[in-house]
Length: 110
Length: 120
Image (tube, rainbow over all chains, first blue to last red; front, side):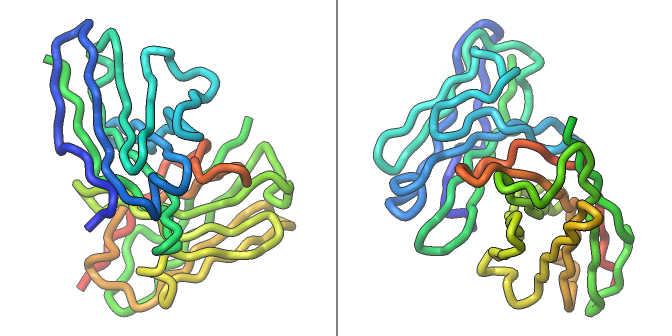
């Protein structure tokens, strides 16, 4: 069982904004930076967010993230069909000495 | 352009040892800014970090796998490897190698992944 909890799925119409939550604890999200990954079926994950809110070069600015206390969230604005994928949060857990991934969220564009 | 490529048997018998290698091109793995890791994903399930080796050769493992996993780096060949002993069906997964910068835990370059099936 992952220590980072995400909703199994979220869906929204094209052009709208969808938000994915990631709930953790003081030993992971509350202690270390959060990363977010996007994964298409049959492909390797791709980092979308590092250091809680930073976008790597080449990642669309339609993606944004925030963190408060022991929770984090990823927002996708101007939702497009190409955003349909699985999304994972991740963080280092200082109690477990483990890099933990969230349970994953499937985004569906209606 | 940095590229990572996993290689190894796609089928391993239960109780035996899984061995994979990640060949890195486009950068030296001995560069002081990077850590090199293994992550796996069972079919239809989420991601699991296995461990990472640093540019200096130090290794960290996930507590859940530390007694069975060994990660090592061959700086002269710009490659790093994973050995996982006493495998069971639960170790059936896509295995990815990946790179992260020393200042963050985010893995920013990934290999394409290799499927490993553990047979009875």
